Figure (spheres, rainbow over the protein chains, first blue to last red):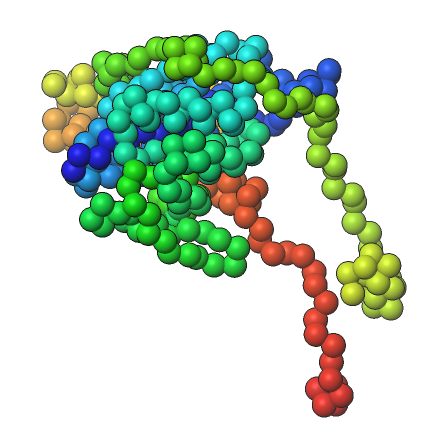
Length: 254
Length: 97
């Protein structure tokens, strides 16, 4: 009942947008492109809000690191039912170089500051697909982690989490406080409707800088090149079964 | 809230929902406007209430549509549907006969 939940939500290029590589090949075009909340983070928010509705959690805090526009993402989270937001301001220029480790440090620090007992994040963001923030946050806090959650249940001081692993499901118990990362099938996130977005404008968003949290944003990684995925090669028609078999053999399929 | 305000509110909410409509916002707005104009002379409060309910239902339907679309895209992108062709186990002599 006294659980305070910290949820991370990232502003990413909308899932429906066709991604274009920048001419300098060091990133993708983001100017004038529609952005929205990372779908896996929506699932994370939804789970936190459901915990609150079940009276398991008492407060849901949505955190986003990014430029000014990240506030819109937080606003969406608030419209979905989060209680308040924290916006960690990072200028667009630095945002490109922001690494999962930085975000993990920020989240870990905030979790301590806010005395959160549960951190829920999406398993990965659909822009960089790092799949690292939850794991590193857990490591930094020295909390247990339950990644790729597809079901979450609270028992006494523990969480029973069903995880999606290769070839099946795994059920684990973790002691609280803990870090959870959400998989696609955890829940079906609600839509942030216009009336709820309006209501969310009354909720508070605290602003801070990474410096305030004592997090250094020095890069450890360097982007060498960003390229489009290879285009799918055209198929061919074969005359008869024998040719098909030969072709498949050549392709190493049989 | 008066019925008039409710109708205006419904119209605004529907417009908001139409921003990501698969056939485009303009198409959606056009249809929406026509649907509202068609019934603008309705004065029976009972009927207006029924229509508002129908509008609310449409909002729910669009929400479901968006959710499903996103879910399916994510599923296709991130979860293998195991379409790789793999060789069947070699036929034993018995099975071949």
